[in-house]
Image (tube, rainbow over all chains, first blue to last red; front, side):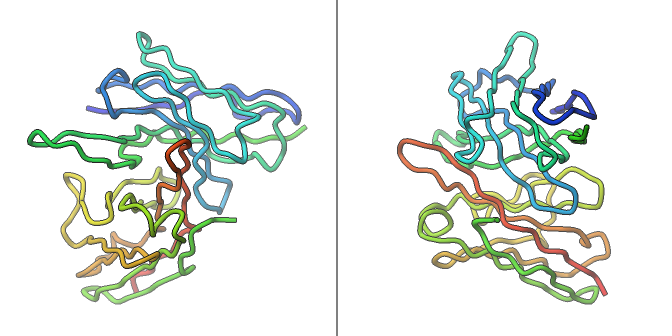
Length: 129
Length: 113
């Protein structure tokens, strides 16, 4: 069974750095085409992709937030960590980690998928003083 | 502000079919068959219901179908059921040869009358 679970602080102060950990099981982050990423959702608003890291350790960031984000992985521990600096009240949101399948193979053929196929339950982060 | 456009709400009676549109540009929806759709019930995590424009993950009802024409992708739910009442988000790959980007739509609230 594939699962992901987010953990981190529920409350951070403005200007602080947020550190979130995604612990996953049921799949390997060394399998070609498999990535783990982060998506956030402010209360009552839309989803927003933040970053992801792929099976090769390559890292990808949202253009609008890339100066504030750092993503890393510990494959042996099956964890992916996201750091977001200089937190602001507008960053108040539920933060989800998700498995992203970018490529897959079926019957000897390779396909691109680029879909967020399994999600964690999310963790609510409030930024306030 | 989302790069993709969706109607704020769509409603239908049980058994009817509804369609949700997702309009992008030639930089995203129009250039890639990498549109996915997510169902989100209140206070729950999103759930993938369609990927690669038309494909359904294992376990997703065949009442859900996807299509695309030009810069607009669509999700159709046929035989509408009470359990389909939720928010639906489209997502498209919007990167290029040298960068990766994913964009989500603003979401559509589906109400079963």
